[in-house]
Length: 281
Image (cartoon, rainbow, N blue to C red; front, side):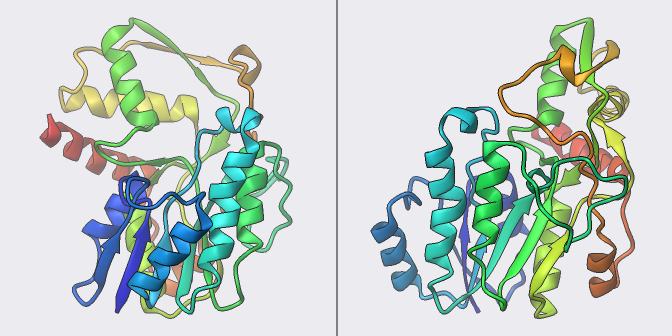
């Protein structure tokens, strides 16, 4: 099976390559290889590789910057997806909890109505609309990976620099280890799945809860010298250009059922990631 992975240099793109099955013949591309805003360049690459499967892990993910650069975000998050969907290959597209408005009183199901409240969310929702019935859409949230640019590594850096941190406590969701997400994607591909699925680690957290856990686990592994004071703050205390959903927990029960998986709590996967981070030095 010939597989084209986009966003190869990102957290998920790297995890997809590391967890790929032996029978997958991988071609991995990143922005240095193909500019996804260049339609003809992308079409030429698709024709050259002629993949059986496209795993689209590429995205414009600068949530706040997208507020002033929505056209570029749309070109990558939506227009490029439409071009990939022209291919004969099955397309697996990764989307986000940001397609929801955060007003739900329960975890969002795959078929729930979308109502994005940011430019990033709007462009990701537009990308979803370009998929065919035979394609596979996987929404996720709060992704992190050892060695990547993410909340976990930012917190470790700040915890080594400061004695006190304020972290938002009124945005609720669940973190997602990219390695676990990659394994779920390969599992759904192996099952021949199509349609919409959700994946995040189990459990519920605010960014504050996540930060407290990072501090405790990182200190146990000597990634930080001491645990700083971590103070819960409101979203209004930390204004950003883009609005974030206040509640974006994803209902992953259909995914677990399809794969026969046991849910793994986010703190368990955080510990595994931090052990990898410690090995990286």
